[in-house]
Image (cartoon, rainbow, N blue to C red; front, top):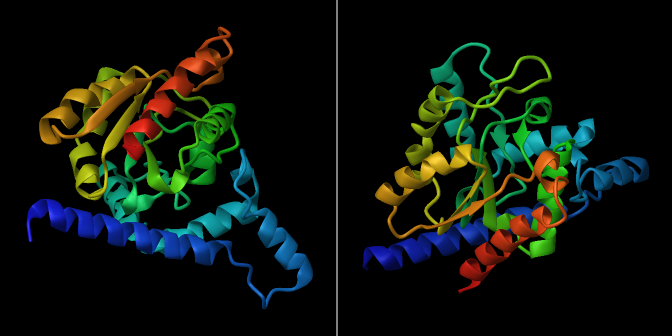
Length: 247
């Protein structure tokens, strides 16, 4: 069997495992009481700012044990060990595609709300995540086919305020990117979101010349609300990513 055929077999298996896990997550637990089922159900509805809810954060943490997440959970832990004590490296979101992802959204660095929730997630309780959630929904990209990360994987702020990533941050952060790509055998498209993420273009192109790479503005309120057409510029990129995904 050729390498291309083997990749297709692995890709399909990862998709199947991810869908089986997703179906199990969405099934209500019949042993729960009525009141706890209502609370659990509310924590399972995919919506903006969901991770403000402590029950939702707890359940998301439990989902890190899902098969499509274990290699990524271990990758994040290795980064924490390398950076040292006090490192804030949020986890990947288990509600995304994990190791079965076909699109990687690469942003700049985790914000304070990602540290608060513990996840790089479109469900984080901040306006940037809300914009990203809504734009993906409008574009029609199934989130289980995506994964979201940052070129600088650790928090670079102090307290509740993040500082801009500098060249040293980006260079150090990008050094782990190839290790991540090795964990994503189904990956076909990378969307670089924001100027700092564009540093990864040459790294990805050299190691994965077959990868389709798109560039998008950042979905922060500072950009989205600055001019009437800015939201549409991001949406156009996401729709192009969907077109490539379905090609």
